[in-house]
Length: 177
Image (cartoon, rainbow, N blue to C red; front, side, top):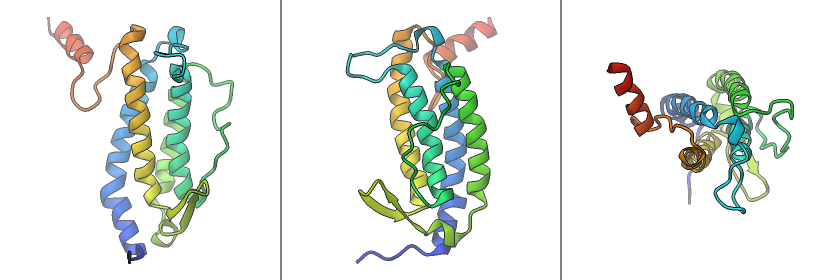
């Protein structure tokens, strides 16, 4: 039988394991969102694939939605998180960065009792709120990988993700020349 997570364990996970990588990954996410050229945002590698702009919107909204599920103690399934007036990849990346900064600040202040509150994920399973931090991060990394694989095909530069990318290396070499 599995043990129940304690409030102290939840605080330890959040403060000592989750928050650092979450902040670092959010910076990478913003770089990937911004790298999508606005004039090629409708690109999709296959008719059944999401377009680049659909992925940009999904990543920006979902990354915040998972963090907000921890903060609010409920997983909100409302798809209309980002206003339709926020249109371009750069505008969405700016929206993402601003909302994420606010959410990160709130998340970092949560107490253990709040972090162990059970949150329902769309009727499929229930977990302590704090576990939605990593679940959301893995979801974001997955879709960010999808989106980054579109970039070069769209004629865009691929930013560094986990180490220097080819494009960033070429830019660095040009700057040194």
